[in-house]
Length: 236
Image 1 (cartoon, rainbow, N blue to C red):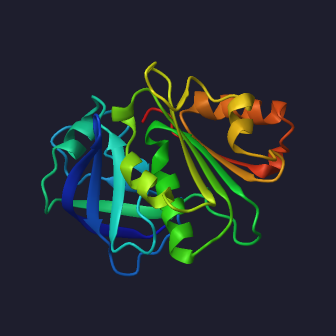
Image 2: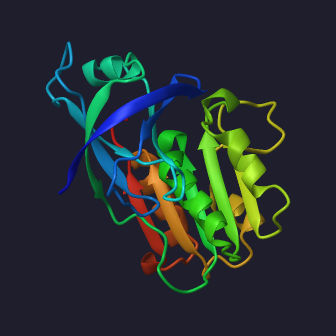
């Protein structure tokens, strides 16, 4: 797999405890919306048992001029060093990897179900659909505990606004005053927003527990397993 040196341009908080990192796009690097890369720190001041690299989804779309990833800032050696990098820092990028990507043909509706930092590949795919002028129906269920945890929410709201074929369903699980959907996504919630559950392609990503639970909900609703694509984010 190809390897590139990439330079950090800037960082930006995008939610509570969540940092986006923007890099120059190296010459010759190409990827498909939804794919991930391995970022490797160069000679970090500390390390841990998992080494100096991690797999991170690209949150940027292929048409954007920069590469962008976003991550929760956990208390690990890798995250501490990553979160403290200054513009100009050079990292190694390997990849891209992964098959959690948009279908290459067909016009079936798309339903994305994600939570937390699992929004990163979904942002990439949603912006790619908009770039291509794709007119299929798209429903995005985006679950977080609180509003402050929801990375890129304002941007996603703007992207979906005014488009009759796009719906963003923001779900908060720990805010009883939230006027939108609350609690955990179940079949009843799905049916409030998706007319015919058997028609769409479903993209599930996020913590393993969320992905497993959503697969069970879809199976119980009669959705065929071949309509479901998944990607899990463990320990992010």
